Structure formats: C-alpha cells, structure tokens
Image (cartoon, rainbow, N blue to C red):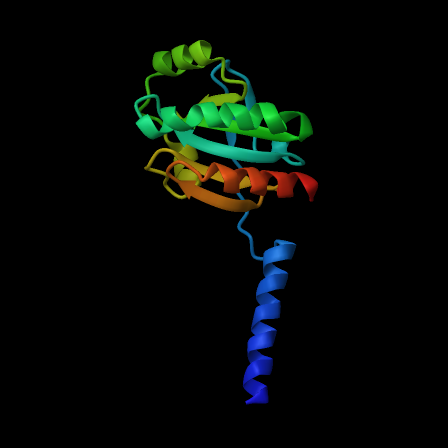
Length: 163
C-alpha cells in the first residue's frame, strides 16, 4: 500500500515539475509573416515578449465579439512586454481587413495569411477565432478555440510576464 502511494506521489511531483518548469511545452512554429503594411517579421523576432497569436476573420462573429477585449489586453499589457499578432485567415478579403483595422484602430500587429501557410504551421487552424498564448521563449502556454475566457487569459498573461 505504501509503495502505491509513493508511486502516486512521484507521478504527481513529475506533473508539477513539468507544469511549472515548462518542460514538455510545445514550441510555437518558427514562422515569418508580413504585416498588412508590408513589413516582414517573425515569431522568433518577438522572443522575450509574451505573444497572443490570434487567427481571425472579418466574417467571423466570434472574432468581432472578442476584438474589443483583445484591444484592451494590448493596451493594458503592451507596455509590460505583451504583443498581439492578429492573423486574418486566407479566405478573408484584404480590403475588409484593412477597413476593419482602420475603423477600429487595432493597436497590434495585423497580418493576412494569404496562402494559408501560417494556419497550416499552427496545426491546420480552420476554426476562428483560434488563439495561442506564447511565453517569452516561444512556448505555447494555452490554445483557445473560440472566444477565450478573458479572466483566465488575463491571469495567464500576468503570470507569463512575471516569469
């Protein structure tokens, strides 16, 4: 009986170590992208910052619903080293993306995944919104399909900024 409890204790300790050290977290893909302004960058260039990679579309009602919250997150945590990378899906219309960005004054990086390669790199993202929260080392902390729980997302961002 004692051996069984010892085994359970070892397993629980291993889980805690993996959870809190980041061991076992999957790295985000090393992708390059162009902003809608035509500037080229990469996720690797964003290392050292906490990054939310958000796949969205102007035709997605959930995406439009979450955008004001993503704007608030960027405004709140941007000065502390947080970035949002909003990647419009390949099927989105460039003029719609540009018009939405100008109308809402999105305070973050906006890219258009014209050929679908970015969505493919992140595991064939097909549903929007889909978001990936990355730590400062480019490891995926959490993936959200649908609108994130904003309280949880705030807590995760705060924790990632502190580490």
